Length: 113
Image 1 (cartoon, helix red, strand yellow):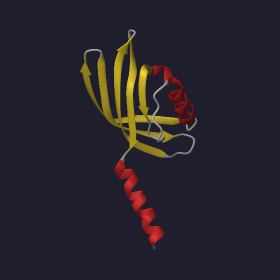
Image 2 (cartoon, rainbow, N blue to C red):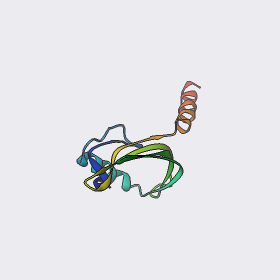
Image 3 (cartoon, rainbow, N blue to C red):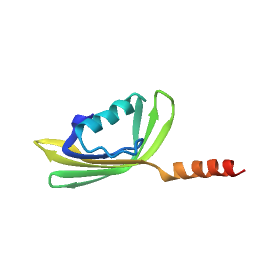
Image 4 (cartoon, one colour):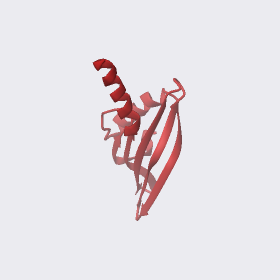
């Protein structure tokens, strides 16, 4: 997976707080992530094209085969044409806020009770 990223990448992953900006750190993230056996589905996709670049923004959902957990996230990918191949220059993914905030509010309410 890490080989699909450009020479100067930036990965802001869904399930890590650490920005990844080189091959080694991106590979490390995906080695850990793929152990969860994720299966992804794109729910919405919006593509914009330019000269030697392309951007895909949308929403995807992963089901972790190892646990059955689901993670719904919004994403953005920026691809660049590098040495004749389309590579990922920027990848941002974050869990949907609506999925996180209510859970946090419920946990806080339980602690206060």
